[in-house]
Image 1: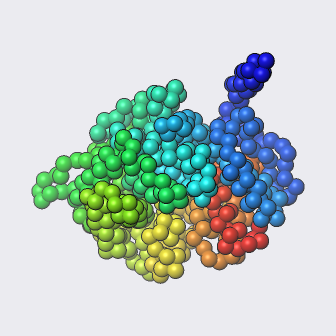
Image 2 (image 1 turned 180 degrees about the vertical axis):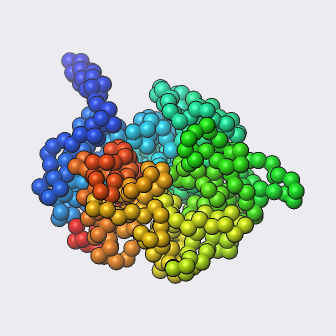
Image 3 (image 1 turned 60 degrees about the vertical axis):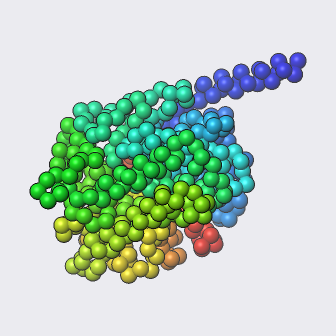
Length: 497
C-alpha cells in the first residue's frame, strides 16, 4: 500500500512538472504577492515543483541575507534573483558522472562565460553542501567536454545523452567559420577569449572554495586546457610574417546587415602586431571586435592563467601546463602595460578598450564583463590604481564614453549589442562592486531596484527613459550577478538597504 502511495506521488509530481509554464512567459508577467515597499516588487520564483534545482542550503542563505535587508523591496528582489539560476536554468544534471548543462535563460544554450558567472555566487556555500558542489563540478566537466571538442565555441548545445533537443540558432546561418563546427553540438562559434578565462575561472574558483580537484582527472579537462594554451600562443602571433600572411587560426564571417555580427579581413579580424596580448574575434557581448586585442578580456585571461598555474603548483600536477600558463600570463600583462594604455585628452593615462599593436586605440567600454570598469573585480589591478581611476572616470562620463547613457529612468553603461540609449543594470552593479564610496554604492542599488519594469527581475538592458522598453525578462547571469552585488554591498556597508 505504501509503495502504491509513493508511486502515485511521483506520477502526480511528473504531471505537475509537465504543466509548468515556460519561464520565458512566466518572467514576462508579474506574480503576487508583492512587496510592501514603493516599488511593489512581485514574487517571481516559479512554483516549487517547477524549479529545476532545489537546494536547502541556498534557501537558508536567502533567509539569512534577507534578514540583513530592511528594505522590503530589496528583500523581495533578492529572493527572486539570487536563486534564479537554480530555479530556472538547470536544464540537465547528472549527479553521478557528474555533468551539468545550464541554459543562459531565454536562450536554450550554454554559454561558457554566462554559465560560469551563473554559479559563482553559490561557491561560498558549496564547501558544506555536496549537492551544490556536485552541480558546479558537473558544470566544469561539461565545459571541459565542450571546449575539448571545439575550443573556438562560445555557446554550446546540450549533449545528446541529456535527451534535450538542440536549440535553433536564428542567426547561425549564412556563416563561413574556420575551423568548421557542427551546429548540433555548438550553438554559436563566435570566438571570444573570455570563454577561455571563464573556463579557467570556474575550475580554480571551485577548487579554492571546496578543495575538490576531481575535475582534473576527468576525461576532457587536461586535453581541453592543453588545446586552449596552444591556441592562446598561436593567437599572440602577428598577422604578418614579414611579407607573408601567418597561417590563420580562427575566422568568422556572416552574411548580415549588421557590422557587429561579422569580422573584418575575410573573418580573420583587423591586422595586429605582436604585443604579448591575445586576439579575440568577438567581445563578451557577442559583438565583433574592431581592434583584435580586447584589453579587458586579455586582463581577465591574464588573471585566470595565473590562477590556473597557482592551482596546479599547489596540487603538484601538470608542470608543463603550469609553467606555460604562468609564462603566457606574464606576456599578456606586459603587453597590456606597454600597448594597452593610452593618453586621453581629458583623463590622462587610461586603459584602452581595444588596440592592435600598431598604435590604433579604441577608447570606450561595454556593459558586458569583462569590461574596463570590472578590472579590479577581475583582480587585474586595485581599484585605487591611478590608471584605473582615470579609466573609470572616462567610462562613467557622458562626454567621453559613447556608450554611457543618462536618462530619466536609469543611467549607466550600455552596449552596441542592444543599440543606443539602453543601460545594462549589470553594468550598474559592476560600478557599485568596484566602488569604495557608500554613497555611490547606494546610488547603484537604487538605480537597479527601480529598473525591473515592474517584473522583479534583472533585465539585460533598459531604455534610459522608458522602463517598458527592455530586453530579456529572463537573464540568469544578470540576476545572479546583481545578487552577488547585494551580498557584497551589505557586507561592506551594513544597513545600506
